Length: 242
Image 1: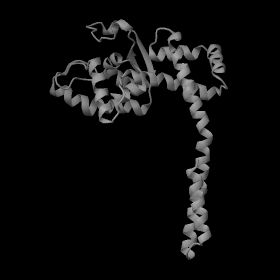
Image 2: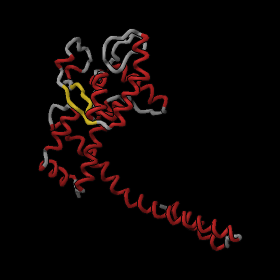
Image 3: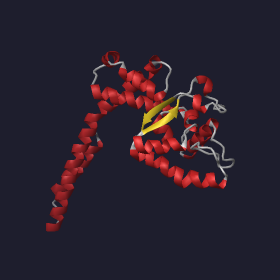
């Protein structure tokens, strides 16, 4: 369930409408068909109108498609057999066999967060926010924009990116994605600023490993000198300051 939210960036009701047949199709073509709901549809009370709901296709990896297929085989199928389930919805209520309701998704996410010691209020929609933000972060790092203005101009020059994100997420308009650009920019700048420090740590680790290897060699030949040990201690202290 959590992986579905993370990989699809879909609304909770949209995830509750996933079907088994679509999982097997995704195994073959790499795209998972997801219902695209408007705000009025968020209650999940859709009756028999599922086939009338517009759909979008979201690319997923072979690994994720296999994960969902295994869930069908090893978790859903035994439960469906036990409860005589005849519908094709992916997620089932373990007591009734009915399609899992959107509110149940929220309840489960909050239970998991509590078990993990997360104190903030969480909801399935956070996964959707994260999905969208990651797309823009990746694009910012890709184009190597020097300022938020540069990136916004790049977005304007290639409106296809916004349209693509809109298609993937089912947003009603590209403008509704603007708030994510600012969030993504802050995150991307944090990553960019951290890269030199990360690189320094990698180089220090490499030097330390070489020093440890040298100490081991000296130990095999006899006790390492006091000066060599002091050098390693200095290196460790220097690393702690970074």
